[in-house]
Image 1 (cartoon, rainbow, N blue to C red):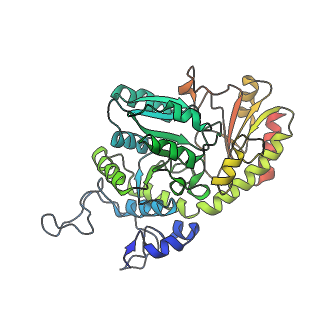
Image 2 (cartoon, one colour):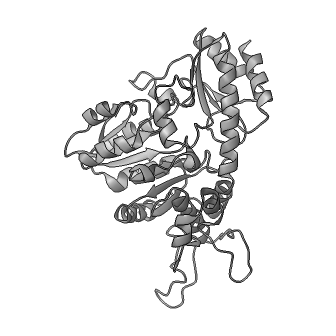
Image 3 (tube, one colour):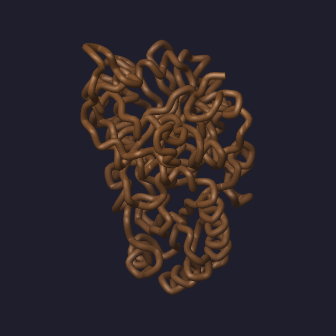
Length: 392
């Protein structure tokens, strides 16, 4: 059987997630036996005569072996037909929009979408002529109502959403999108491929900021798309090459290295998050604790059905209001005050003033007393003690 993404197709279908994350996309180098993909720091490639390409490589914007290894691994862990790596998550999103929509088309996005996604859709795609409507991903009927028949090309969901951790039923939303002739795009950044695989539930495309859990060490910026359908994949491939927002080989190497330990890291992220949630739910200064693993979370049953575990992201509201929330963010020591998420270190942020400042004054504005935590893999007792000091 032919080789595909570093493993046979037969083996790929049978192997577990951890095995695919480590082995898919690359075989040990035939000349040296190197078990990791080399960093091919080259912009161009020698041709064996005009048009005689070795392995299909001619120029590193179009293709690079280090990037190809990462892309093969991404496709394998998301159980898609083809993966694509980008210089950032927003570069991946922009390429997707340009590849699959045209002026006059329409998108449905979450009503609590990541601020950067909203800015891209509203301020970049909007002037280009692509319109959008917002709907809660947790309400399939309202998502369906937001679709404009004949014009909606993409139904775009995050699940869990950022930062309110709402849950969308991927299978139900896929059916709604397909009935309308649209494609379902799932931003799987918060869940990661280890906890959730949207393509197996009917989604057409998965998008990631690989800066987050896939890379996992806060040392590289990147993005990814994985397509379920080869025809859609060809459109993305054309635009990836034409637009050129690709990662360099060192960035691709770091992201691929992070992917190999994703499973073990996510288990610890989830363990620690559950401990932190237990602490927060009993603290008198804390109001609502937002975490899909809580039985009181309105999306708990759906998350339980489509996720392996509930993730490392936790949001909560402070009873005393915005000033106290800002004070808590400034007082932590183990939790680092900073944007981003999904790294081995724990982060704390105030979405209203930081990651979601771009949606202030819109229907997507987040509560001013909200704090978002990215739970790292430190000692859980240290994380809890740090939050207790900051809250008290």
